[in-house]
Length: 197
Image (cartoon, rainbow, N blue to C red; front, top):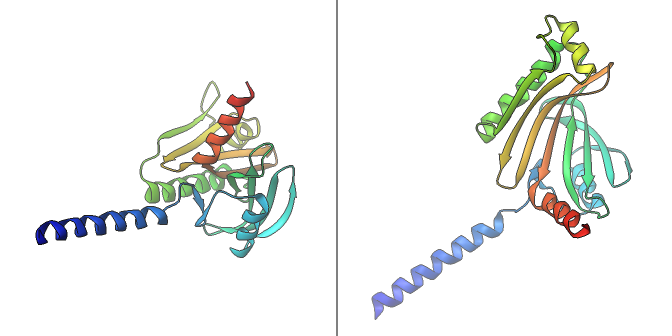
């Protein structure tokens, strides 16, 4: 009888410790240790506590500025679900680069750091959509400006995904972007779209 009681007691302790461990983890993707969840104002407040400065908010999105991953003056975009004040995506826009050498260096540096932290990426596309590979720095930057540069790496994680990519806003503005997508809140977007059908 004493052995049965001891076994049951140990079993209950084990289940309790697992339950406590499960409550410590979040079902949401995190950015700078903060779960990608909650209202826009709540999330912006947490980002301000992390040292970012609010630039402004508009149409369910906020723009902040600050240092991130050893890069100065990054722009952080916080996006909410359409029609619902629930944060679902964070995008970091790194400083503008004027040469392919510096732009691609930023991209490959961040890709390497992400691979070190999260393991092998789930998808990598690194090419120019041209008949022949651009030969020099100017030609490569021209293709970036023409949206002919397809460089992105995606990491699929349990709570969402992270994608690092090369982007542009115009011929004079080319940069690396890092986007964090929360799986739980992205599913809510999908479900809302299905409900609308």
